[in-house]
Picture 1 (tube, rainbow, N blue to C red):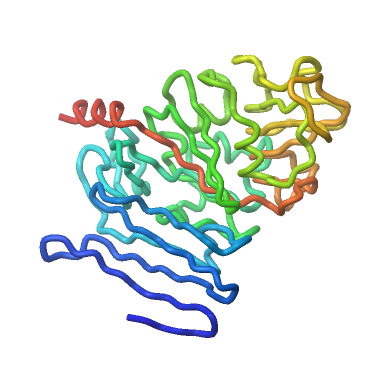
Picture 2 (cartoon, helix red, strand yellow):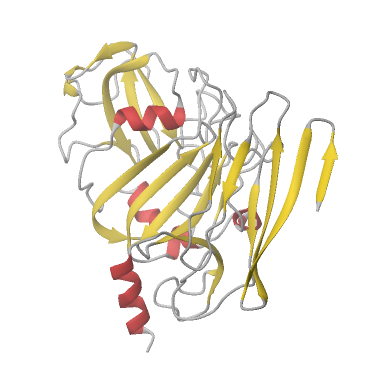
Length: 321
């Protein structure tokens, strides 16, 4: 079916396998600027769900411009094995009583759980929503569409209860991703809000700024903070002294802080600015889940994925037998 309206087109594609529909994809694209957004569907081990854009300046997954939704029948079993919503029941060793969790399975069999979306101000630094064991706005988490600026924040029960996570991936409307790697496994909540599990390698500032603020002028002596504490294990790459937040800078839940200018490794200061997630409301109470008034590229809009690798999935599968 093909429908035209103004400069926008939309078409709907059904994928069939052994005589039944296994997934439906709705793809829309704004072609007013001559750009074309193309999407590929991955289901049951085939090519991945990824949206690529040739339109200059176009953000990925904008709900108002271009979106891709995979709608599959909710599947069951011990662990997720295909893209879509998986229902975790009570007593589930992987995610006890988590209910609906949206997963994408990569080519290596790793499961990517969509645990958060951020674009507003519900998850400022110090908010009890970070540590609460309950969900928040979870109905928004059944598809990979990035929210519009200031639209909503959402947190899945899997944020607090999903076990076996060793990697977190943050995906932004800027079309970039940053990965956090940890030395051990835990829940996303523990990995992102506490310093209980160390990083296996220091977060990459260049990737981080590409996700949150590609145009930032604050690049000097970048230092990571988690749960309001400066991360010094492993040792920071770009700060050689003055490790605490300098000047009038304020703590965050998960961010880099850096000073105006460039330099790596150099001493921090004189004035640090935070770039990341769960920023202090005193900086910008309307956007503090993801941005401050220092952000040059506008408020970030994020998908946060928790990755359970194939080895952990297999262990959970065996534990259920």
